[in-house]
Structure formats: C-alpha cells, structure tokens
Amino acid sequence: MNKLFFPQGTLSIEDNKPAQEIAFCVCGGRKPAASWLNMTAEKLPGTPEFFAADRGLDYYHAAQFYPDRVIGDGDSADPVLWQQAVESGKAEVFPADKNETDLQLLLEILPPDKLWIFSGVYGGRLDHLLSAFETLGTEALQKNRTIVLADEREITVFVPEGVKIKFYPPAEETPVAVSLLAFTEKSKVSVSGTRWQLDETELSRNNPFAISNEMSEAEQLKELPHITFSCLAGMTVFYVAG
Image 1: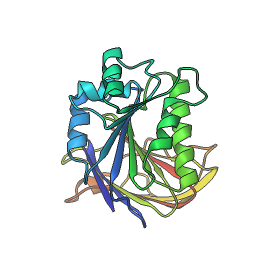
Image 2 (image 1 turned 30 degrees about the vertical axis):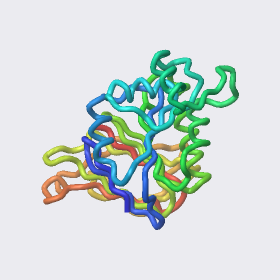
Image 3 (image 1 turned 180 degrees about the vertical axis):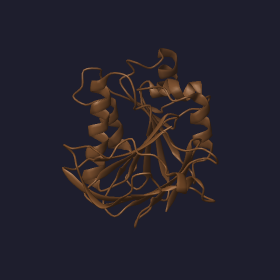
Image 4 (image 1 turned 60 degrees about the vertical axis):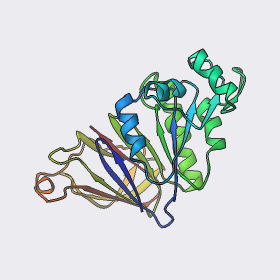
C-alpha cells in the first residue's frame, strides 16, 4: 500500500504490487503553489526522485529546490535556470522541432518500477490539458499502472482494475467534489462514504454521470471520515476537487 500525504488530504492506494519508491514530476501547465509543492515533497515516503519537464524547472525554483533530472527543449523555461541545468548535466535537451511533447519524452525516462506523480499538468489551454490527460491515461492503461496527478486544487488518479483508493480529508474538512470517469469505454466501480454511493456500477465513457459527488453527512460524523473507491473492471479516473 502507498500512502501519499497532500495538504488537502491523504491518498491511500491499495495495489497488489505497490511501488516502493516515487518518481515526482512537475510539468509546464498550471503552476502548483510553491508552499503546496514544498509540503508535498517533504512528506513523500522513501527516497523520491524529482523530474521536471521544461517550464516545470521554474516551478521547482519558485519552491526553492531543484529536480534531479530535467527534460525538454527549453523553450518555455527560464533561460538562466535552463542553462544551469544543462551545465550541471541534469538536463536532457531535445530540439524544438520534435514529434513528441515534453511530457511524452518525460515518460520515456521515468523509472518503470516507481509510483508516478505529476503536478503542473492542469490548467492552461484545453488542447494541452487533453493531450496530457490522454497521454497519461493511455500510459496507465497500457502498462496497467496507477498514475497520480495533483496540485493544491485537484487530485486525479488513473485507477486500474483491482486497485482500491481511499481519500482522507483533513480534520473538519470535506472535498468540494468527488467524481468518477471511465477512461476505458466501460468500467465497473464501487464507492462509499459519499452522498451517492455506487455498488458494482458500470460507468461508460460516453455517459459521464458520476460527477460532483460529495462526502455524506453520516461519513463526516465518523472518527476518521474517508471515501473508499474500488475499480472492479476497466480503468477509471478518480477525481477530488478542493
């Protein structure tokens, strides 16, 4: 089991083959808050390895620490920081005219045996967001692996069949929204601790109805309130806002 301690709550991932270490990646989308990035990095278990894709390097700098490896063409990163990364030998530089995105290049160098967490992937242009979502979801599906996306506003988990997720919000807080989206054409799920509970319910990618759920009032009264989600078939996206 992997436990991830984010400022907005604890994410527990129950997998038959839990990863022993973490690869934490910051990309060039919406900038994660520096305080959130620092707090999250400090609480990562084990000995995490830190990666940046292009402008993600700037986001690390704003949080006053630096990645172990940097990848991209440097077109959106601060030129001084990029040159420093190149001179330190930490940067793997690609030409601007290339057939892959910086995120796709990053996936090629990530250690396959680690749990992958990505920040800096939300926001910005819709085409960039959809490209990142499809790229990461396809990687999770093809490799049958759990992948986590997070910043101070949102948490998204690509959940393969047979994996259970539990989310524990901070004391006296509840998520703004909890949503489930089928990434495969169909998936089967169960969720409890929510206002609208599902028991072995089939979701369809072309009919995304299981969104904007919330923690139930009964769950909020428990000593350790949490939401429990299981993906029973296919691949499902587990999403928390707030």
